[in-house]
Length: 133
Image (cartoon, rainbow, N blue to C red; front, side):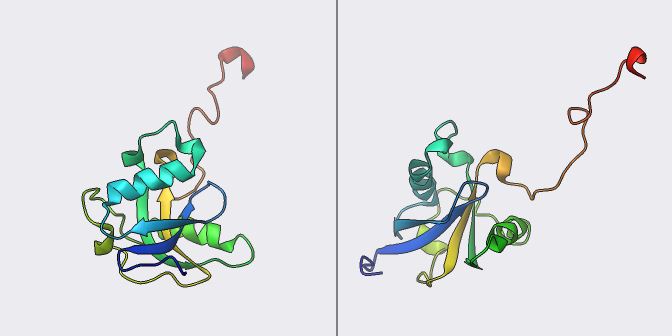
């Protein structure tokens, strides 16, 4: 972690449904809103949303060799409190240093912020007309 200073620290973030965990060099005195901007800048496919629409959770999630961490990350979004105050300082939430092999921050775009489960809706199965029945 050689780049850590008293105010700067390296953490790993995982964007739900958005690839692999990635490193973020974070200034602990920055706000959560600034952290969201940094995450958005790292992930180009987020260019169509406002950074303040991202949801964040602080976790200590082991990144295993397989994809198990992806499913566990999805479950954690309903178990761990979401960070709701964009004006709060990062240091209020991320007190510990990053541990190798762990994900520290979960992020989700607006459509990915709820746990995955299949919902049957009228758009899933369109209504049939009388002639089709």
